[in-house]
Structures are given as structure tokens and as C-alpha cells.
Length: 301
Ligand SMILES: [Zn+2]
Image (cartoon, rainbow, N blue to C red; front, top):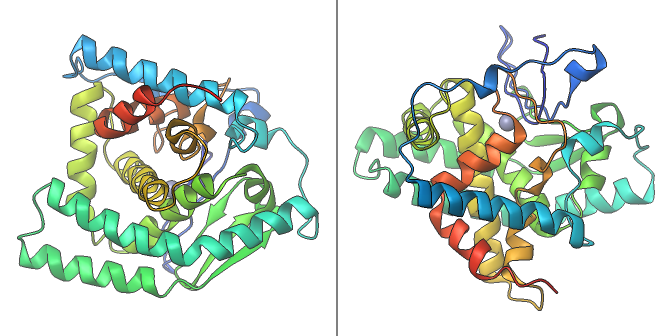
């Protein structure tokens, strides 16, 4: 298996058609090495300096909330540094219950977000794409269970041989301490399932990657495009959930939870993944509405 320098979910394909999605952190640090491939720029970003500043401000809100919010998601480098957690531990059990409870909600939000993204990127009028979309939605509908797994630590994975189950590392389950954080990651995994083993949604994924590359000047193609699309669907799904479930907490605090596991100290990527902080950067560049909501509602409580 390819060594991952950093971060989250990774989709692998093998001859037996296994789809895996890892949150696999800082393996490189275990070897005392780092990779810097994710930081290579292809061309200057098309974002204006003003927009770039707004994105950086919004990142500041997300990562400040990571320190202030008692329900903030742990940063992935912090999860990685912790000892494995037994499945029967109270934190892992609470996380597993949360994930299972939110799975139907995440499935519905992913479908709605996918439909919205297809409209945003102009694919909704294509009959061929609509057929693929319907197949993707059917795959999402089939997912039924979250399986806690101590050995998976801070990873989440889906095997196409068992397409109804999302395997979740117990450290990861415990580190996502809010509904918003959990829905975001469930949605990320569901998007991998939607794309499936033959990359049904590759046109949409490529379009998102191209736009993200253009806006940020980062190289976001191939697997990186799929990962950022999964993250985007995750953020969109969580935002819908926040809109549908009003509460007393600030909107910014709740929205921040959907992406703040990327607020790492050691910011490393690899050829398949942007670094975590560049992931937030690209996500927010793609999602100006989220930037505005984070900034406009930044008052802390
Ligand atoms: Zn992934």
C-alpha cells in the first residue's frame, strides 16, 4: 500500500475492487520524513487578493473555534498522536452511536448536495450524467451501518465488497465531537461510495478539481480532485444540517466544526491529498457562501 504522508480519507482500488478510504495521518512522521508535494503551485491563483484575504480570515475563524468550542473536532495530527481506543470505551461508543444516528441524515444531505453541485457545475441537463447520478444515489441509499474499529484508529474506510458499511476508527469517532463534524465526515465517505469503483462522477469531480486548482494555484487533479470534492460535499451537507436545525450556538461555531479537523500544527500532504490547511483553503475558495457565513457570524460566545 502506498505510504500516506498525511491526512484523511483515501480511496484505493485493487483487482478485487476494494474501495478504501482512509483518514491516515502523518505516517511520514513515524518514519521521520515529510513530503511536500502538495504545496507545489502550477500557476498563480485566480482569486483576487481581497478574496484570498477573506478566505484566510475565515480559516482564522475555523481554527480559533477549534480552541474555543468544547465540541470542536480534534485536529487530525492530534488524533494521530493518541493511543488507540477500545470499541467499548465511552468516547468510542458515544461516537459510534452518534455516527449511526446521523447516517440517514448524512445520506439525505449528500444526495441534496450532489444535486446542487451538479447544477452549480452545469451537469444537470446531461442525460448521461443524470443516469450516473441516479446510480450514485442508489449506492448511497444502500449504506446502512457504521462499524467501529479500534485498529483503524483515525481512519474511515469503505470496502466495495461490503458497500453497506462504513468502517470508522474509534479515535476518529471520538475526535468528532459534534453532529456537524460527524455529518461532514460521513458525507465525505458517502461521496466516495457515490463515485464507486468506476468513478461514475468523474466529470463532476474533475470540474471541481479544475476550479479549485484555478482559484488556489495548487495542483488539485486526479485523486486530489476526488478528495476535495468529498470534502466539499461534506461541508455542504453539514451546512444544510445547520440550516435545518437552528440552535443557540453561533452559526460560525457550528459551521467551523465541519472542517476544523484540518487545523493541524504539522501541515503535510502527499500526491493524493492536499495538506490539511490547503484543504481548508481550497474548500473555502470553492465555497464563498461558507466564507461569508463564517466571517459574518464570527462573534464568539
Ligand atoms: Zn477520502
